[in-house]
Image (cartoon, rainbow, N blue to C red):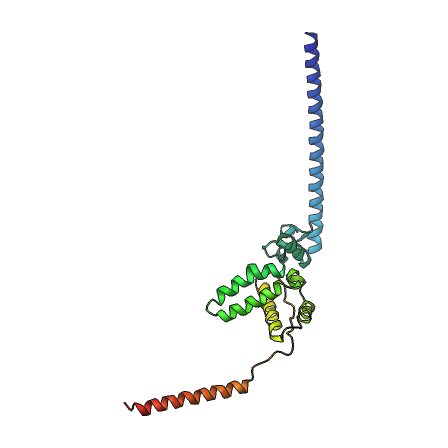
Amino acid sequence: MASRQAWRRRCAASLSCSCAWSAFFNRRREIELRSEFNREQVDRRASALRFSCDETLLARCPECGKFFRSDRAVFARDNKPLCDDACRIAWDRRVSPIPRLRDFLTSEFLPFVRARHATKKKTVAYYDYGARSLAESDLGTVRLDAISSQHAAAYASKNGHVTASTVNCALRTLRHALNLAVEWGKLQSAPRVPLMKGERQRDPRRDRRRICGLHRIVQTAVARRRAADPQ
């Protein structure tokens, strides 16, 4: 009987002790929340004075944690309002990372080309060959935002053993892919991609002579047919 009473006293003491500690930690947490709220109010008032605006126009940047004017926000690719371009770039890289060239070509560029030029098999084959050449090279492992004209020049120098037309096929594919990346919001701007010199170009004078020759052949054939069949 005595042992049971002692056990009850120990349980009551431990319960009161735990309740005391719980009340202490709750009080401490409440003080911390009040202090944090007061600091935020002070920062909000100071930011309102600094930006010369009402406190209702202020918002906290989710990237850097600073206050900024919501009517002057810079929006990320997912329409998240941020304070400036630096936070927007950091947010875009963290939330929606920029893909490598190889992944962008296979997952987005080639499906777009095949859908848009479905009736032009030669155009699809041209960009397909250029994308395959880029993906198999060292340039395929580079992120889109890191590609520059220096990478294009390095690709052209490494493939100097092939014709200029073959190299320029890949470079034109790269140029088109980067321009589409800018159009789709994955890049801010596309770098300049110079083509390799020495590519054989069509002679417009030869084309005109060929067209004139074909025109004369057609006219001669039509005249002979009319002469053979007067009606």
